[in-house]
Image 1 (cartoon, one colour):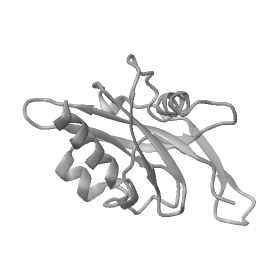
Image 2 (tube, helix red, strand yellow; image 1 turned 90 degrees about the horizontal axis):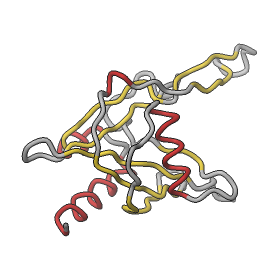
Image 3 (cartoon, rainbow, N blue to C red; image 1 turned 180 degrees about the vertical axis):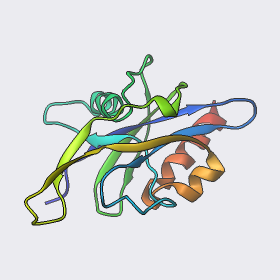
Length: 155
């Protein structure tokens, strides 16, 4: 059985000549010592009966703590390494990444210890140039950057 589909938002801005994207580094013990190749867009599972764009907007607010003030446009769909499909939407905007307030999730850690701990969904957020994002982003999400570049070049 395939994993449930997800949806996410790529927030971008164009200060000067360069395009920048907002990426997050997930929280929790699995991501603790990972940096390059661990950054991603805010995303999450599409709930039953929910439209992908609505799930993307909800997940952005949950992981960033800021609601979007514009409706995002469809950008692309990617299949992550684990097989999960992610429908991606994009929107131009700006925010201070130091001000993010992510919701938390709980998990048993260490495994089988009986201890439950809370971790932020997004440990940190950062604006990155497309070049830097290509070095730092989860490899299976790199096609998102290609889709954004194409969309911006096409107008």
